[in-house]
Amino acid sequence: QVQLVQSGAEVKKPGASVKISCRASGYTFTSYYMHWVRQAPGQGLEWLGIINPSGTTTNYAQKFQGRVTMTRDTSTTTLYMEMSSLRSEDTAVYYCAREVAVGNGALQYWGQGTLVTVSS
Amino acid sequence: DIVMTQSPDSLAVSLGERATINCKSSQSVLYSSSNRSHLAWYQQKPGQPPKLLTYWASTRESGVPDRFSGSGSGTDFTLTISSLQAEDVAVYYCQQYYSSPRTFGPGTKVDIK
Image (cartoon, each protein chain N blue to C red):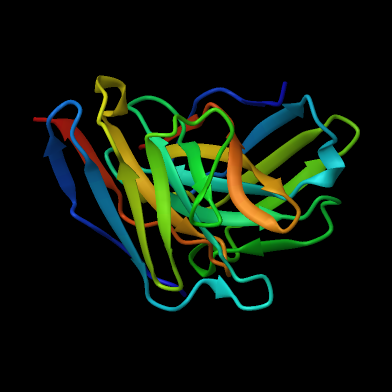
């Protein structure tokens, strides 16, 4: 079965960087677009960006341009999201998610989430 | 960017009654070549990731109970829970995947009256 298993919670100071991983299994890793979505405490869902199946193309929400980098390692079937210059407003649960299929961008499978806390 | 709005912000419905959530996009998310609206609905329970309910506005995801149905096209969409069950208490989000950024609605909280 499809599984997306994310790395554990992180606590970072303002200005630091964080890199979250999302290990995929149960399907052909190089056949699906992947997304990152975050959710601040008590808030709604916010889309961060998308990476293509081969990892050669990314598209980030304008708000995160220059601060977010998404990569994928096909040898370990792992997706990564790195965010720099962290501020308190970046405190949130970060999710990786897989599309239904190429051409269908609905998010069918989700990781369990990684809580990132930014605090001095 | 396509802005997604939802109404109401919250609603309370008696068990077994119908719940209706509306979602509106600031521009059409209908792909004319396929005649499909690029709109999904998700359910999120506390402490859990979102769960896909429907895509293409009205196609139910495998395993989702048939009391959940999506409808609409273009810019106006509806998620209907035909007979609310206790396990349906959650926040429901719509999302457009027509263009990036793939924006979500603000969510609608559904409770039992």
